[in-house]
Length: 265
Image (cartoon, rainbow, N blue to C red; front, top):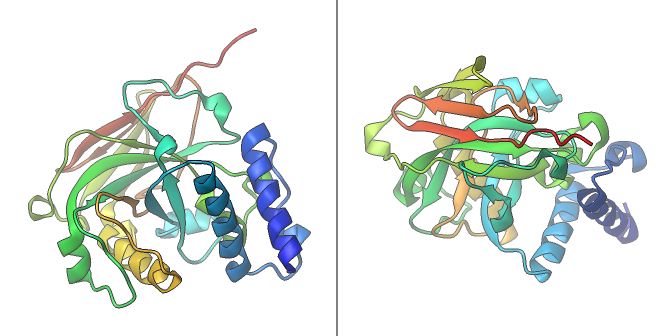
């Protein structure tokens, strides 16, 4: 891809955020589209958003579980950026019309108490950097039409990021084994998913290690106070207007995303 191609791809994705009109897969538009080019496109968007005043509050790791890789047809993790305006409170209904085709994933969010910078970050380093964990729901969305994505497509689309809902009760690592932490997801009172922390690269902490060592060589440090979303414990659940989604985690607590009912004419 030429520099002009990279710029045009970034502009197309930014425009899709604005008008909520998805674009064709970039892998179809640009033959030979690579993961390296996809991260270039993601970072071009991040640069524009930060120049416009948006504030980075953390990062997400996506596609860490076999079930999510199988659901979206990819074979390795990716990462994206989380901005302050992507965080929603549990008590406030979320307007689904601001998305294109949203889905929800249950995750165990990390909040860091000290910076974490790779390469060379170990599991011990990651544990030492974690302040506490929170029950969380990530809203993912795709600016690529019909979720017809490859790994490169979702990377370019900021890892399909769209929103985050955090629970309000912190839990500490010495009181829970994240590998064995079970999760049940309810939507509108019905069980729609179950899973455990071990689905996330064996442990969500491994996802944090992967992230720090992946972004470190790019000059990116995971700052103190950052929220890190390490990946979903279950398959993603499609959002339905008016139907709340609750994830309950053993030993950690629960979190609910409330979605506003569909407006009628």
